[in-house]
Amino acid sequence: MKSNTSDSVLSKNKFSESIFRIGSRFSLHKAFDDFLTLAIAACTQNPVTKKSYYEDEYLETIAYYKDSELRHEFPKAFAYLITEMEERLGSGGLGNDVLGEFFETNISNGRNGQFFTPYPICQFMASITHTDRVSDIDGQSDRPLRILDPSCGSGRMLLAAHKRNGTQHRYYGIDIDRVCVKITALNLFLNGMWHNEVMCANALMPDDFVIAYHISLFPLGIFKIEVKEHSLLWTLHRESFPVREKKKPVGESIVLDERPINERPKDTSSQLVLF
Image (cartoon, rainbow, N blue to C red):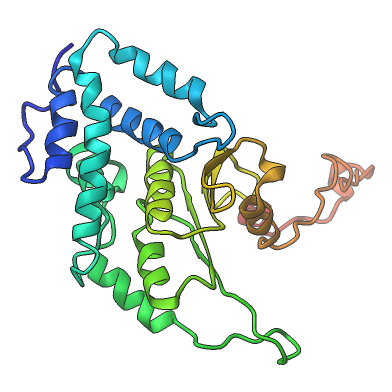
């Protein structure tokens, strides 16, 4: 296959080098997307069978690379990812969104408006929107915040909010790009953000739904939600839209004027009113 890395510059970090090594023979976009699929499956192990809950999907994905030694790069890339994320935890303004940086720089290249918010801006926004105590309507009891990023990209804004606000709150992300949703799900899982959810959908359309991922601690893993009614995020998001009035059937409000044309009053209104 033709390489997609001819115009790319190898990164200094080992994770990027490993993904580029696979992309030197296969499509870089496919290699990265397949890496995300394999990583999610690897993070979601059934304690009874000792296999992934998504073992079939894992085997189907890796089978594409069965005739190449490069298939061994996937577990190496995952190990490099964990190492680099850990090393960057105390980096302050750098953040540890290794996946998002790789995607933005080497996969999207800014196409389709996929420029992610710089991490220092995410930190600033998290700091100015933080509330120490949130009360219910009755003003009596505290309750956790529900923090939603309706165009989450790689989940960078949620990571910053989690670092600022803590684990007692709930973090939700929506994005129209399924690759970005996978990145966010992995970022939340690897940063210990349990009981949260990421959904692939158009946030401007309350009924839209492709797939969602639930980040769970017990059982441990990233679990796919393929039925929208089973998604808490889809339900909450849909209910946040104002109730739409039921449209009348076409023609129901039309009243015919049976008078001859020459006896009808002249209509001096603008045609603009019709629209």
